[in-house]
Image (cartoon, rainbow, N blue to C red; front, side, top):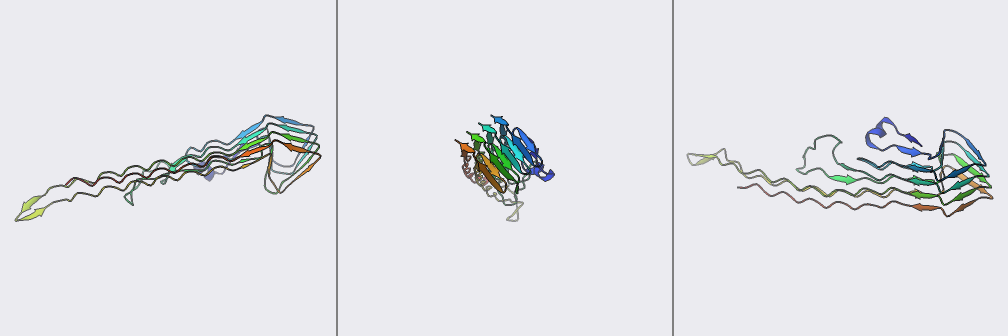
Length: 232
């Protein structure tokens, strides 16, 4: 497979995986070829979405012509989503709203084309070929983490009495609000045997027992409890 991604993607997204057996940067002709039990799998997201995977056997940027060929039990799987806080990775949280950070679940990656996936605008023409038991399975979303409990308020500090007036007295502080429960990540989508592109043409060919299964959406986290007020 061939991972792709820009420098910006590397900072906030897992790179996608293209083609379990073959990546074609242009047009492709396949004649009397067998692709059996190949797979393309997107990586799990460490802090962001799971990577998508396209083309369990073949991914092509250009047009594909298939003749007298067999695609048998190929698979494509999206990566599982990750979990991240609502602050930048590695940064110290700033409690501007008197609330700890929230940790959200991110979506799973998509799985497209157990046998063949195409770049936008590309086409497939298949003749006298068989596509058997291809499986596309989307990645599951990551659950949102339970919210952190708020910190206890500051303790009151006694002052001194000067001519009947308290000097330097500090009242007890309010407790910090509990964090929101993180959002659960959405499920990654799935498209079966052949995916993407502008058109697919089949002649004297068959797609048999193809399966496409979306990932599982995840639950949200439970909100944290507010912190107790400070002691008087």
